Length: 535
Image (cartoon, rainbow, N blue to C red; front, side):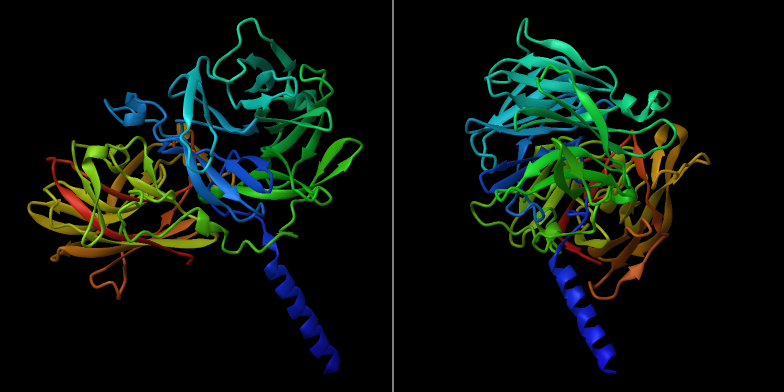
């Protein structure tokens, strides 16, 4: 009995210790293509949000594991038909891709690139939290570029896929330097796997750093014979090379990122891992140095726990409930919110007394993915829910508004007005017979056909209705509910088997508040609040 008692105490002690340690993933939400820097004792991180506006979120942390969004590099990437969703065009899965965050001589710099704009973009500011950000852009599109300020004052970008190139920029990084260095520095990243394995994901996601006089280049790649995201590191004594490389990590698709050190001299790699429908989530990997090379992980594995502060509440700086109540100097929308594409600012507003979000229709659309002004937030794991209260008294015939689990394979619960009557509807997409679910829930949309249909509908005879979507990322399913009084919830329709899809969308599922017209414009719906929960 005494031995069992002490074993129990010992087990409880270990449990309490592990509960106080940081856990991987450090953010269980879609925060891909991470780029991290340290400025004195503060860490900053940028990420990819593609077709969302505002874009390139900037996050801040004091401990590397608890992060909060503090700003965005831009409000609107570009004004064109794709980002504005005009003339039948859209930018799902595009917009801006992998960014590079740097700090140089008192200035913060973020670079990114966009097939949607056809340019490489650079943003800079003295204050990453308050801005303003000054914008530059230039052609051509430099894929997955890494901005780099060398000690001699020269400025470069490394970029490419498979073949990695070095190009010199102007001193302020605003454009390409005429007659500057422009050369291939690595012929094929994937040769690290062997000559028979170069047909997989071409080495991309450049992140270059200079440490103790040597240049270290991180890339993500995959061998030909199997999909296995891997970290490849090359190093050189000169930025122009020659570079020698090695496979640095191949563990559960955790890859792409770079190195970061602490004020105490500890080293980590900030990477991301593919995790199905929730998206690509950040992992922090311990690093030690051997013979001038960073060695990632513990015996080649990414640990579940880290000897860093507790991050069990890490999602609170990334997502947020919103009662839509605003004080005089409050921003219209907290930083957790992003619009799906560029918003039409004339047709949404935050109203007061009581606070609510109003979305007004301004055109006819055929389905929810075409709709203007879908206001979104990330979903998060392992389980989460989002709920709202909607007033539908000002809808017009053909209007549809509600709460969506947004990805290419979407599902929503909402209200549709037809023949002056309102119906609660649960709608979701169907995928064609060629649906593939082979790579941790990832599918290639070139192989499928999508459509949508009403799964269930219920008459609505009052002006307000409550909606909720509950998500379980352990099985990648979403469940849909409505309530007439906010107390008794009724399940509606079928569960949605969520799937992370590319090249369309190319991001984890999001909660979205929406309203669109199918017959006449000018109707509106009011959202009284949006509340998230970890269940």
